[in-house]
Length: 334
Image (cartoon, rainbow, N blue to C red; front, side):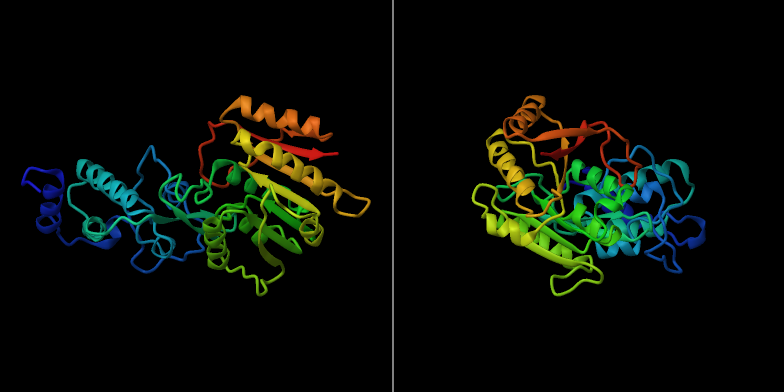
């Protein structure tokens, strides 16, 4: 590392430029008296905990040293970029450096970047949902180790429609890292919730996140939680009957033309396997990245004798994510 390189100059700042100042002057990082992790944070904090891109940097928030960040730290790279930008802006507008900023950056400069990171999404109550995710979007041959926009949209929709889940048995297809299901279990009070996926690495991460958020298969307060391997191509009717779902949900499962056929066959089987007069309700949230693929899915539904209704009601923003992308919610029925 040369003496002119940015990292060298930054380390020099850490070693030379630190000066003590009253902690009350600026609360860029945390409250020295301790911050209640259940306090409802600002929008800026919501973006930080979820590792989102930011367009502005206010000064009066708790971020890197907040209890939520300590328990579920964002990636090392994200924290480095965040703190470097915060220091740069502080130096432009403040007359004195802030000790805590340099201390925090010093802690992450030498930290090793891991393949996993943690993101936190806050419920309306202020309670955090902490998820262990992979830093890479695609890893271990799957895209199921990160949270996608449609899962966040479906979770917001569930918060506005708890009656769809309360007192029911819910099956989620392609649960991924578990965001939607954890939100539903924490807020919407289903009797039983069945998370499902088919990739072993995803199932392992899913179980870890369920436990991390206080839900266990040994008995969670108010809801029975199960995690099942459901292979759409080879799923058995007996397994579906045993689950006995009243409500079936899925997010971001329509992305590969090669799996549309088996997904539609599974939905057709689920809609007729309940064994009761009332068919289960099926809701699917999709990010429309490729309109041709999405239209193929709808055409296959029609060929299978299944109908769908587009749910057009907007949802109240709760979680931070890219809302420019096109997301559609549909209800599938016989």
